[in-house]
Length: 416
Image (cartoon, rainbow, N blue to C red):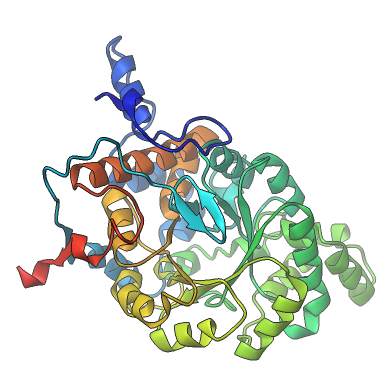
């Protein structure tokens, strides 16, 4: 493999973005009988991480809503589509993975999905993930449910691309929402990802079996953004006549009720966010063409086709299954991103071919975090990107642009 002879744009802040070079490095070290610390078998990451996790963290990460039907559908949906490779393309370079997202050119079409409470998976938690994302030139989406503060994650992410995910407090707590948005903007988060499907936690048997809700414990895991917020701290003290630090359990419960208020917002409430956030706004959790069309009528920049990895609604439609319909409905009006179920490079290629502009990586990087902290997360990102690039190269796909990668690359297995 002559990966050092790639012809590709060099846009990285931390070095040449060359995913296949990771493969070359592994084989080179193998000449002196060195073995990599982490497996490249993407479907083994979960089982290996599971062995390292506590029962509580395992149930929280791997568990799904209800019987897990939605999660299974997410994975099964990928196998319904197959890549049709083209031969003798005469290409003199490796595929160009760069993509224009939210007006910026990024080297890769993936981002780290927002995952909360990461310190239950590794003591370094979000800080390790944010550092790895910056190192690998992959955008980091920070969860409102993080176990580190907005400012700490920004420092760890350095000059990386970072976006802030909002679990949206009810309108009676608009001053808290404004505080979160102002802190995120000041800390260099350039886009706002608004999660629509989690105004209350779903029916999650694996968590209930363990009696485990990480947001209610008397610690800072999952609630650190609230505990570090001046407006929330002030409101808590005024309401209870005691400082937040003197009653962490009560404070954790109150912050949890604040970001998971139990009832959804309305479409008209988006105008409030637009008034208090000047950057791009992306709505996460869209699953129907009708909701996508409603979103396209608003002053926002994109939507994420996502069912929260099957963690919220059991019996729901697979994200990949509904992606083409949503792209057909609004793909020319705003950016459509994809989330839920990606485990390997071929999955990324299929989602992009079906019209997604960007793919979010969720559980796999968490497994990397469990297995090796920052290095484990970096390994997962590099492995997924290397797999994506070689899959495209061997299928004769020159870039992730629509004129090179669209539905003509795929065929439904049921049609064969």
